[in-house]
Image 1 (cartoon, rainbow, N blue to C red):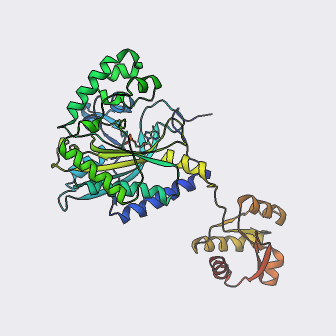
Image 2: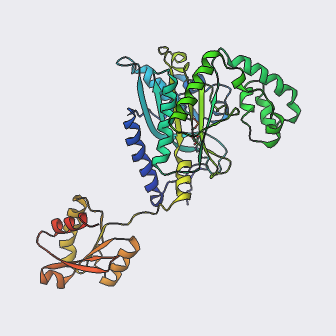
Image 3: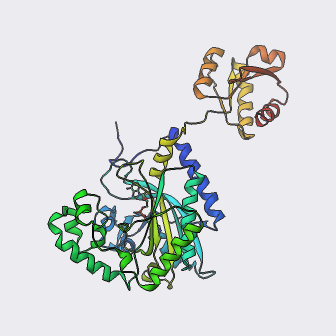
Length: 420
Ligand code: HAM
């Protein structure tokens, strides 16, 4: 028997309703904030990712699925969407009409990470990217959009973690100070941190190994190195979030795993998922559009990990599949012939309808309707055809109503649409 490739998974029909609910809620919510959908491809030049996410990051160093493309250039499955959206913003001059563009995209991303709960090699993200606004109030509004999405989806137990990563002016001072403390503690750090400390010292702050966390308990904090503008920006972001009653925690260890960030960085974390605790992450990336060849444009965005969000929602409430509104139980050849037309008409009229053409006994058909979780069953056999009335049974109340065969589709559709 053929099996799935390791680290990949099927999302099965019995689990799909929560995915669909998230997608529908997201689209409405984001559109209310002025965002429009964009759908970039899942493959890009590898160079796009190395230039934006950064050569020294885990993602680019070891997690991309990369293949030879045409003319000797390497191409990669996208490990995230921001780089692609920025590429499209520049390539299609989306800034020309108005420099402020708000774009969202939902789709699969690919990272060759070690598979575990909450971490897949193909996972889905909801991405929002806002271009052309440098105001700290734009940061607060975007974070508000993320936070209230979770509220709309009735997800509780989340914490918003916030930090400022400074800018190219003030970050080097922090990096140097951090690097010298890390060098002093080198012997206490895990192998990963020792490997990373020279190339990417900020990532060492993010290590989850208890020994590393202890060793760096008193490491310098970015907040103490921020330049005047970055400090002022961050104070306004936190002030605006307080005004919006959005709870947050300032987290000096929050550094993010992608190099393009400047100033505001944030994550929405949960304790319901074990080690993979971030359900969303994002931040400002004011230098990226210019670095990729576009106009000097500030930007900020975030991505929600849908797989993890689904896991949090599924753990907290019953998301079982809804059965059909109606099961059409047809007994005998003549009823099947007539009833197949009704079933088609009822589905078209907006009633979620199931039927069975195998001409089973009424008992067998009722068992099947029960198994499917149908709310109503429409029963028609030789007796009903002769009397000119089918029977509509409410499965919960266990009541029955006769329905004339003439204009049956319209009558049943009206009855079901008007039910409480
Ligand atoms: P990220 O933190 O790498 O940020 O990913 C965002 C979210 O995607 C994570 O918080 C997590 O929920 C989910 N995620 C990441 N990797 C996996 C995985 N292997 N399996 C399951 N879920 C995963 C970004 O990707 C940035 N592009 C976000 C952003 C947009 N920043 C600015 N704009």
